[in-house]
Image 1 (cartoon, rainbow, N blue to C red):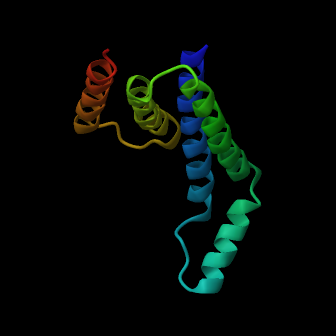
Image 2 (tube, rainbow, N blue to C red):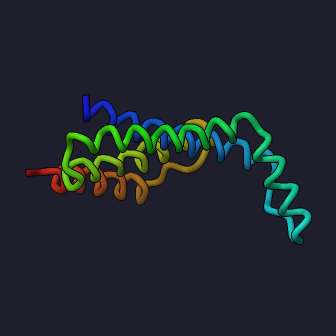
Length: 120
């Protein structure tokens, strides 16, 4: 069950990043000036999708705490890097962000790092 919580942490983290990015992209660039920035964030914080992304981050923290009750940190933590892999692939699919060979090479190194870093 502990590994389920590790992967739930990753899934919730990926969801939260994508939900926030999709909504921020609709608002455009951060405005200049205090009032513009204030209203920009106020609008984001009243957006249900942004709130769901923030809730996902909170739930990911709870899930991580559950995982830590039975797993060693040094064994489980490398798997949180899978969030990078998930975000890159899903942002390519959902946001049409480029999926380049350098990114793919980097993801390969991340996966290799997870395999090596989680041993013993």
